[in-house]
Amino acid sequence: MKWRYLSAFGLLCISLSAMAQLTIGGTRPIYDSRTKTYMLTVPETVFGGAYQAPVVIDSGVTSVKIDGHEVTSQVTFPLVVADTSYTFVFKKDSRLTQSTIHFTYLPIMCITGTFSNSYVVAPVEITFPDGQGVQSYRARIKQAGTSTNLQWIYKRNYHVKFIDDNDEKMDVSFFGLRNDNHWRLDAGTRDMIRFRNYAANGLWADFGTKSYYADKQSKALSYVRGSHVEVFMNGAYHGFYNFHEFLDRKQMKLKKYEEVIDEDNPEQSSVQFHGMMWKGADCTPQTLFMLSGNVPDNTKERWCGYELEYPELDDVFPTDYSVLYNAVKFVARSNDYNFNRQVGDYFDLPVVADYLMFLHVVFGIDNADNNMVLACYDQAVDKKITFAVWDLDATVGQHYLDIDGYYHADEIQPENELEDVPNNMCMFKSNKLFNRLKAIPQFYRMVVNRYWQLRENVLDPDSLVERYQAIYRRLDACGALDRESQRWSGTDEIDYRTLDFPAELEYLCDWLRRRIAYLDTHTFACRRGDVNDDGKVGIDDITALINYLLAGAPTDDFNDINADVDADNLVNISDVTSLINLLLSS
Image 1 (cartoon, rainbow, N blue to C red):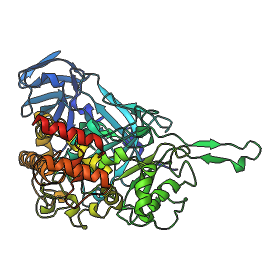
Image 2: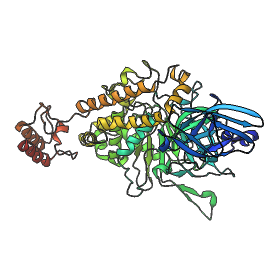
Image 3: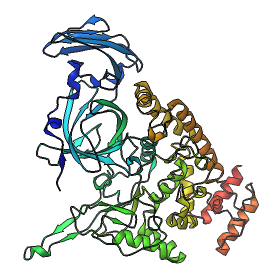
Image 4: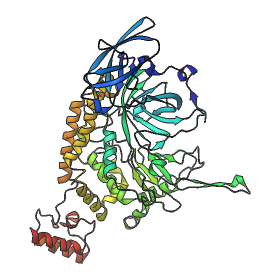
């Protein structure tokens, strides 16, 4: 594959940070050509107090004053907080330059280049608030996303693939995370608080059930991790981003394909497929498991709305869609008897149960067809498909379209069911896999029991609210939210509105509390022991439970969820014992 390159001038340009003419605490202030000011990243521990640091002045600079005080080898900022700034004046070659310096404690990433849907090689500089100076890299960069990559979108997502001087892949580790060449800059463009995706990935990370192959790959992750950074694009401040890992084979620890070499006849060499990965890219009957569709063309990067993620056609040609195709066909065509008996052979049910429950909690309107990531660890051994989370901006009361004001449509308010959202907004109610699974009593008991297990800790309303508030406080304390609002309020992508982060946080926290209250009393309502669903627990419930176990079939007033008294996802004689003990202890 041929790569387009920046001009020689672009690659050899002077560091964006060089205009500062000095380092403070080992770190260069970064110049913003839009506001004509400098941003200095400093250790988070110094925020809220004074900051004293050594200064190294560049050769040729004859005078530096900060806040009117001549600086030679050391500077003291009496108070470092988000809304403070200090005058900065320096003299070089008899030319006097005056500006201001303000502060952050987030890393600062500077990128130079003009980007499109094709990869372009560009310089990347990252300054960390640890005094270690600027880390310089080269990377192939292109725009990412679909709806966030439209013509009128200016704060875009980007793929960033680091390379060495020989244009070979170069693995890099940031924030103590994985060592890899492929990273992603997430803009949060359609998100009115800019960090819903970041927060939702963290929520899933805290409770998502490990995939079925965890005994073989204990470090496999079905989500991405990252950290917020302040981004400068071509010398101008571009807002804060979530700089995170990429969800790929390496993240999920899928087994690599093998090349089978025929030494006698190399032309007959073949590939042994193992790990496979696909993502729902479009809403189709196949991504909704409604129809099996045509037999896949293994020479194509897409099949019926699914996008091939691993292995890529550039590496393995042709590919093999058989595992995905057979799973879709099974859901679409199997009768109820075979579906109930065999669905666990096709899908990682504990993970799917968590995924289903998770979508209800965060109201993931864009994750039931699009943005579903499906993967198989090793199809040569087990063709079971597991799920991973991706692109969770449209969650927690946020729509991906500007509908009914400020992206807060009536249909996504917390007292609604995902199944009730119209198909033109959310296809959840049309997902045949989810619908058929929910009709299996034991599976849906697993979903409800999992919710109530997590309801005691990670899904406690106070815990959920604090999760989002903590992210907000950190971004607010360093001034990132204010800078983001100043940079992107009034732009096309949010229909010329103002980014009002305090109001959005208030809306988000209220939404979360109301959502959990609704799930408690509606979607996942459960009153253990109220078998006959009459609103109380008594002797009649023991009779109803025994009659069910003897008859093997429920009556009209039998509540399957409440009958699972011991919450083990089964209804059997042990529930009778648990119900008797419950009544005796009450």
